Image (cartoon, rainbow, N blue to C red; front, side):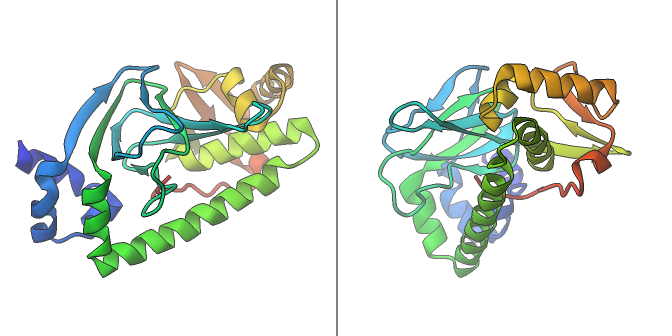
Length: 234
């Protein structure tokens, strides 16, 4: 069992930095758990006891402001560590996390992982670089989604989701995470009617299709340059 877990954990970029001895020291602290679609992994304000590594499926993190006027949404795909926000610092989770599909995760006690990372210079360099990448990504997202034109926010949201959730297959980009007009509406802070109109037009123009709980992007040029992000913590 432990050998199987060890092999699977090596697929995670952060944990692949550790040598066999370092990983052996903490392997017994990792646990595998399955969640059904709609199950909550943790709530905003819960004590931050675990760090998760997504193995299968997709989860969504979200956070509302005090007046419930704005909600931040983001999605996490397999082989990412989460939540990254608050590492080495926060006592409580800053987001609510929910499984949007059936999902399988590894989790480990926060104190155990943070000690392991702090004792490993290479891991700390990785954490620092990942924080920088994550900050740049979120800055870019804010810039693109601050557009006053609602339809443009929808287009930029689809592009962002393609870059962060999509995989290239032939000439297409496929987003395996199920997305609805409501999801994109929440993500882009745009009305569902506007999202439906923009998606309808893109489907008619054969730019994208949404079927079988997947989103297919046929015309990448429509969105400008799409750069797929394969490794990133969240």
